[in-house]
Length: 266
Ligand SMILES: NC(=O)C1=CN([C@@H]2O[C@H](COP(=O)(O)OP(=O)(O)OC[C@H]3O[C@@H](n4cnc5c(N)ncnc54)[C@H](OP(=O)(O)O)[C@@H]3O)[C@@H](O)[C@H]2O)C=CC1
Ligand SMILES: O=C(O)[C@@H]1CCC=N1
Image 1 (spheres, rainbow, N blue to C red):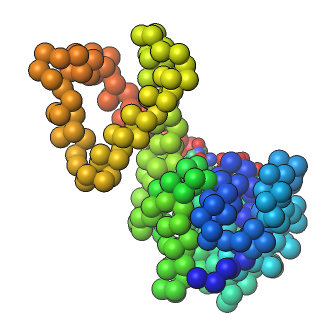
Image 2 (tube, rainbow, N blue to C red):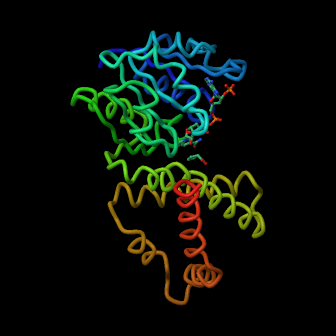
Image 3 (cartoon, helix red, strand yellow):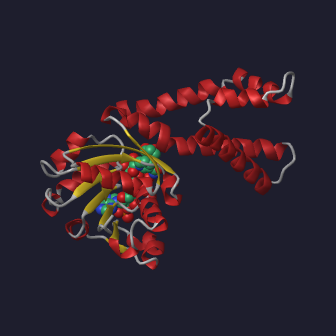
């Protein structure tokens, strides 16, 4: 794939993680990426790697083949509507990673007919381990292939219907934080039963990675793998049942639906 010029509008947590992933994967050369934000001082690490750092969104967009919007949801309308003249529906594609802003809204804010994708990655994109759910409109097959190829370099992609985009945000993007909080709780428990923090961190994180790999590489259902661990009358089932008595699964499901309601109902 040609080294397309990519402008990332909004170089915050996710925007810079995408730039990092594009560089690490070799999908883009540093000179082909421009990242914008108002306070560019926080992007020194990317600048040092050769990425163009800009505060001028119009310049970045007009020079780009691909525009990735990674602004906060409440900034999108105000910022993009002033940049309408910088877009070119014949030459460019827009990829929005913004939560809750519909393809319909994005087209109205920018240009009619502009090829627009919504992609929902997570911050593991910085290390090419994201799950990225993608949908789009006005695009050609070639543009769809490009976007898939771009995010395939940065982890795993799934093509979904736009009506599932909020659910994808919760399960995939918020999910990183849920998983990290689970690991943190394991670390705290691990310290209480004797480990120093660094060793507990390593054991907890590698254990979660192993559990995930059993599902991904083994294509197994979690409960089938749990059955292998739960020795009758053993310590695992004693711990698991106590966790369930305390509302473990229920609290996670309620947390997921609370995150979803926050997106859908505000
Ligand atoms: N963080 C995550 O894990 C995920 C986030 N998302 C979505 O991605 C989007 C970004 O999230 P996140 O990276 O966490 O948020 P951040 O606040 O970290 O990033 C947004 C960035 O936009 C910049 N910005 C604000 N105004 C402008 C402007 N006029 N021109 C250019 N840049 C501007 C801000 O920098 P400055 O103030 O210096 O301009 C800021 O760094 C959100 O819509 C979020 O819902 C989606 C999936 C995962
Ligand atoms: O918390 C948020 O609103 C954003 C969207 C998904 C991850 N972070």
